Image (cartoon, rainbow, N blue to C red; front, side, top):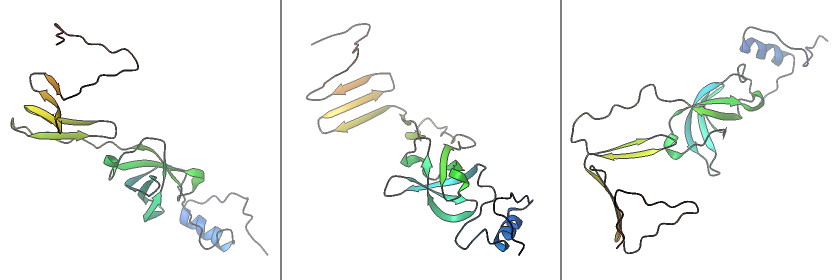
Length: 178
């Protein structure tokens, strides 16, 4: 009986042809997924996070419509959902993706050009920026922090605490206490 030795490398031009050769030789059995290029990076979509806070990706070339849990080498936040991610496959297994980076958008989103642009939010996985033309106020009960266009930062509250485990510095042209 002329059977293909599973330890002999099969050199074929097509992953589908390689799968057919291995299938007829009995090396590949039902339930095993073959991915001819699982050793190469792929671009997938970061779909969601599961109950264990693992990233879930979709669009793996050998399983394009399946949601697969992944591991990551980069920090991922909720605002990264929907972005393209570059993955490698652990041990060449297409069902074990590892996210190694996120693909940056081709061009940054266009900013509104009018002077009365209201509030704009810019966000990536590392930083959130809130911009306003005149003033930003964060308020909770009797406490507030106000940022003005003129560069003033006004902190108000019934109790204000400044605490540092390192150096705590107050610096200004004039410092007025009481």
